[in-house]
Image (cartoon, one colour):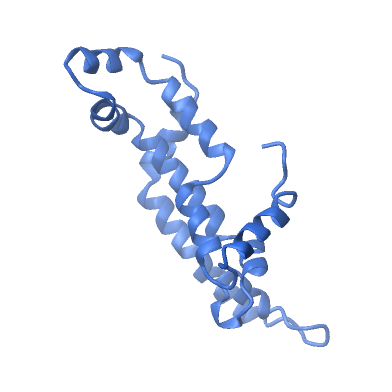
Length: 165
């Protein structure tokens, strides 16, 4: 968490280049599916610390192995935290401007955030405000829908994180 994103940008670019995945959506999609980032790890860790160990011990006494304990006991308990991480990750990657700018070279593959930047016009052109406002609305709609669909779990995941019980 101490290293800013810009410090890791060049090594990450070189990794994607060596894998031959530049100008594809893989550098944009794969990190989103892994919820890469220390914030998510700390959020889930704090949530796991809030779950009583008695639940694990009861499952072990009942004869459950580690995978059964995780799948049937722990996973239902951390569903709010997982949905909170999913909403945070979706928001971060949906509004990502620098990633597509660095990894995509073909204008046909640009994301909506880069497409919106094209409406700013050049040095001698005035910004096309009506198109910028329409694109801003289109960009905000999936975020609003995601938040309202997961609002109950999202608020619960944030409010219960870090509570020791």
